[in-house]
Amino acid sequence: MANGLIIAAPSSGSGKTLVTMGLLGALKNSGVNAVSAKTGPDYIDASFHALTTGQVASNLDPWAMSQNQLRARAQRAAEGADFLLIEGVMGLFDGAVSGNGSTADLAAALNLPVVLVVDVGSMAQSIAAVVHGFSTLRADINVAGVILNRVASERHQMMLRSALEPLNITYLGALGRDDELVIPSRHLGLTLPKDFGAAKDVAKASVGRIEQHINLDLLQEIATPIQAANEPTQLAPLGQRIAIARDQAFAFIYPHILSDWQAQGAELSFFSPLADEAPNSEADAIFLPGGYPELHAENLSNANNFASSMRHAVSANKLIYGECGGYMVLGQSLTNKQGEAFAMLGLLPHASAIDRPRRQLGYRQLSHNSPLPWPKHLRGHEFHYSTQSGQVAQSLFDAADAQGNPQPPMGCVAGNVMGSYAHIIDAAQ
Image 1 (cartoon, rainbow, N blue to C red):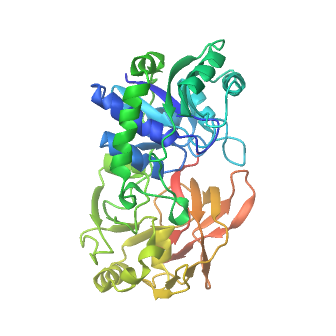
Image 2: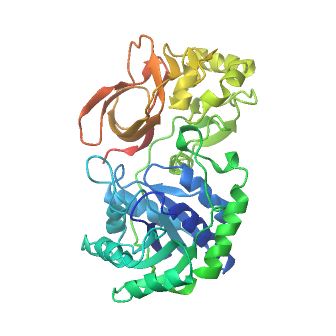
Image 3: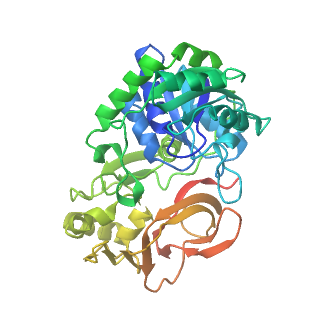
């Protein structure tokens, strides 16, 4: 079995993604076959891991997935590897509004040790109180190591390390301040590696920093084996042959969904609406994932071959399903942030506009009675700045938030065409 551990932090912005990228690349350079996963619903950070591993990272979501499902998916992610490195989400104990779903919950479910990455840019001896508090708050969590980030000088590091000495936690090393090692925010606060010109340079530099300053031998010593588990429960494929939109406008999809479909014998093909490509004519289902269609609305509006092929798919009674950005493209029109409106596919009655002053964000408990070949009760996540208008005869999902508080119905169904703002993560278990 592979060994594993979890990279966590006291708060967001501490440097988890850069440290995780660097550790993955450094382990790979030392001959360790390291793979990765991301805690929670974030598929952006997971895409950065691939810059140093060359492999797609998995998502392990302790709110949307049961403990058995988490163990099964962790084992699946680690198959054939020596080491599974899991990046946490937000702060170690931060989760959904319901209070669960944190990185700590994942660590407890998988019984894996935690390495705490602490931004010490404005801290000295108080580091001991921070690390002590995080390591003792929950008895079922083993904070086994610490990495210091944004250390100002050798003298600063000496003060920090001296303060940590009384604690029974392995000191793995320290990384200095480096303003060049930054992943910028952009549209919706998210940046994909392919949209970030310096991504490969930043990834390479992060590996170099880790190799120079972090003790990889100690890191591997504190890791523990991934526990054996049953096979994960899988969402059924949308069809036997599924055509999936994939380009800069349709980039957000959970890797475990695709691997589940393939494991059940589905044939997957990919096409680019931005390149005006049509889905595979032999497909019996078409999936438009989330992404940034609002940044490419004019191109999508002019993609006549794509549009005509989608209308033909409707007349052929193929199942067509869209999530978030894909759902927006299925509608009548899309108005971008500049107020420009562009015609979309017109397969669903709603119109979309990027006009929210604040993002719509959160986990969703969902239920449906639709042609989707999935269980009635599902778990998903919502993240967008757009609103929809227009009369919807039949919603796709009844919805509640993470606490079970009712939310407005989501999405729309029109025959075999359907979609919503929800990104489906797993069946409710």
